[in-house]
Length: 121
Image (cartoon, rainbow, N blue to C red; front, side, top):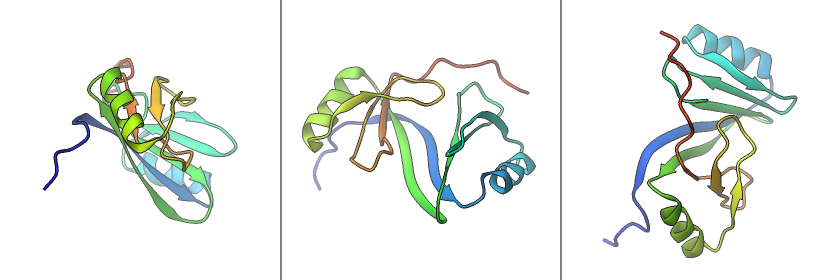
């Protein structure tokens, strides 16, 4: 077994594709989520804690795209990017931050953990 390139500090969010963002939003609201942001191509939903979003749905044919994780530090993010040959770029999503892009346009590691919003409880 090989050692990991970096250790992640937390799960950031799951990313999916769905053909109907309205229907996905209604489904997620039934589970207690609330809309964090919405564009013509993406839906960002948050839970009751202070994270900017915990679920992202992009418009498209149904698919699970993957998970995004918080790297423990900016240095860890740079280490991951160097090991995978991918760039670190600003994340243009709620919460912002920098991300290592795996080439799919869907970042896999983020840093720093975004600022927390007020809990919704």
